[in-house]
Length: 472
Ligand SMILES: [Zn+2]
Image 1: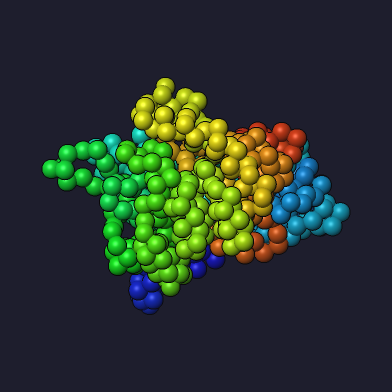
Image 2: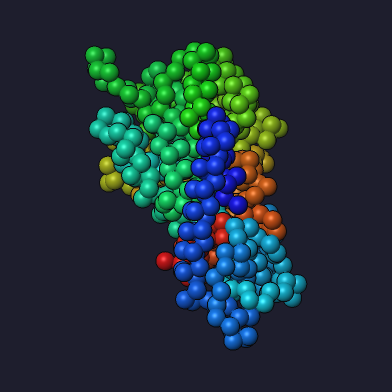
């Protein structure tokens, strides 16, 4: 079952080579067996194989054994809920979903009893920076560190993120293709972490948000992304990113909060550059996520056909209408700016960045709420850097407070909507028969207290338990 996933992350020529495919198959089989054995070892001490016990037989730990999960409530991810649910899992997939009266637990099934809890689909964070751990937005990291540092940070952050119930993330730009490497290591079962949709380096223009600015022109400095100028350069960089394993393309369409010397709404790509990036990505079957805070640069990115606007802090009425009509997602990254305003100075965020964030904070709340209430589709994204890794679930609370979303709407934004934006809704985003068994349980009822989502008591990814009964 793991072979298709592994093949999917291999560069196309390698995946096509029969010898490489055989090697990948052997590796995948070995790792799948190891993961199944690990899960069985973790689960067996605390959950009883009911049928086997009744028959007086020892617990069998076959990989294809059915696991039955019970809870007080299932929030499906599509805005509906089910009381007294039973979810059956076999291998990495869900094989049945219904009430306890509807779904018979097969004889010999392992039972995970989560009564007192609410079961939900694995959460999806559509904007993370797993490779980042410092607070300055990357400029100093780009001067002092190498992508190897990012790989080590990402290994730590990936596990924190998974343990917070986020079983899928979309990485929003990573120098040195570290996100690709970490994704592949997780897919192969070498380290625990969420399913990663990698971008490779973000594409930005000279002097823009992805560049390192304010230093002497006599220094040769790297960007925090790929610095490209002109339509042809964008086309070539999109091709390079896809060649080296990107699942989507991240572009920087306007200025940013954490960058030096640019206004947040300033357009940073020409219409030709936007069109080249989007059309080349589309030709290669990739979607584009656009960093854009405000103004004409945001609107131009929407009109160029990007899949999502990241941040969207001061989105205009004109852009709201255009996004609604086109179905362009808004990923509002609420937590990061709220925290920069609240305690960024104490955490070492540079004063210019705290000032930029503070200047837009109040109006940002108004504009993002307007976009949500107007019907623009939203997906959850935290912009997780520094200490936000592992606290991704706090974004749900901000969606209720700032956007005016109901708790149920916030959950749909953080599950089904994310899956749709990432193009994986056939396999993820809701709890349904045939989908991958990415499941989270939280104590009590998050519809009454949204902060319950911040502390999952149970996390399963692809049928393997990482937190909770039987977990570590
Ligand atoms: Zn970001």
